[in-house]
Image 1 (cartoon, rainbow, N blue to C red):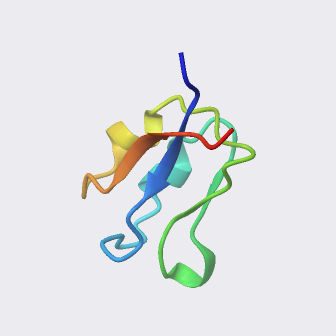
Image 2 (image 1 turned 90 degrees about the horizontal axis):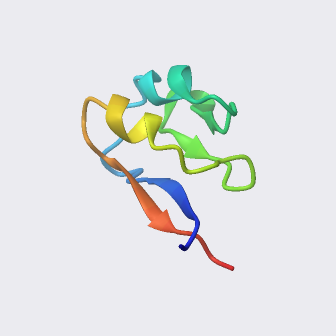
Length: 65
């Protein structure tokens, strides 16, 4: 099974921070209040941010090898 990582649509992100609050690895930040940024090295692909995002703009994608 391929590993998956979270990805955010930065153009649609409203920087609410909901995803950041539920990330168990602290892999998500909202620098300068612009949009969520995901550190793919820290992301374990649990999907908690996907479920929490009120705008439904975070998805899990197959990680690069």
